[in-house]
Amino acid sequence: MDRTFHVYMMASKSGVLYVGMTNNLERRVIQHKQKRNPGFAEKYNVARLVCVEEHARALSAIAREKEIKKWRREKKVALIEARNPTWKDLGRELG
Image (cartoon, rainbow, N blue to C red; front, top):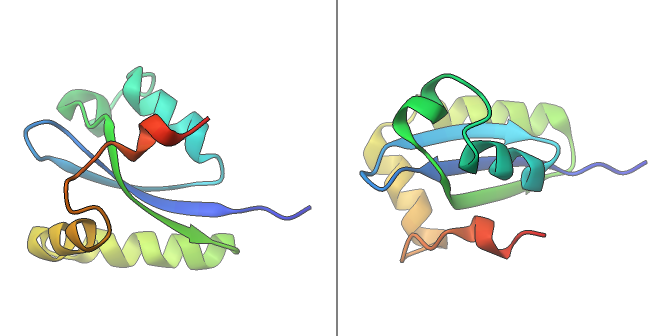
């Protein structure tokens, strides 16, 4: 069975960023939007999917997530704006 893994960034209306990794992007975005998981994402209302990368292997996705999490905010913003200049909620296109 082929699996796809996603590294993603969610943003709040105020610009707080959250970086995560999942093997089910649609489910994970719904969890963020419905605030199902207590913690950072719920506290800061990071509910807009603004950047996504697809990976064929879990290990490469995990490594990429860790890499992005170490970046300064400016570099994360540059990645988002290179792929999604208007910060459109890509989660609306899922499912």
